[in-house]
Length: 155
Image (cartoon, rainbow, N blue to C red; front, side, top):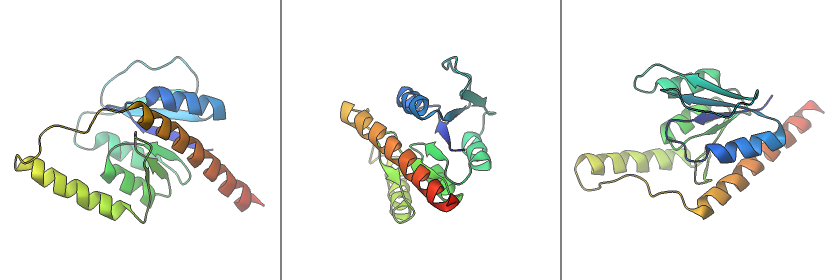
């Protein structure tokens, strides 16, 4: 069964994930380094992992399966999930794909170096209304695409 995993510590689109998952009757697992309040629904789970570098990422990669969806802004995590056969979407609705993840990782590394040198300060821009709309649309499209693939492979 298709599951949605959310890299939850700083995810700004959790409510949107719940809305789409509810419509499709999918399970959602939020993975975080600390407890957080989640809706009291039997299909929403919270997995708290120990503090530590990449602990949440490692847990997601260990549990994700082909055709699952991972919601994350972390390009390195997205790359790891793609290698497991999962899909990955950023909170702005940008899908991560095998053919573009290398460029995204290179850009991430360059920006990290520039931040380390003090050339760039601050983090990503806040999410806009259009980003939320784009995310909802892309998550919906990914689910439909996976379901079509699963239907074709079972016939």
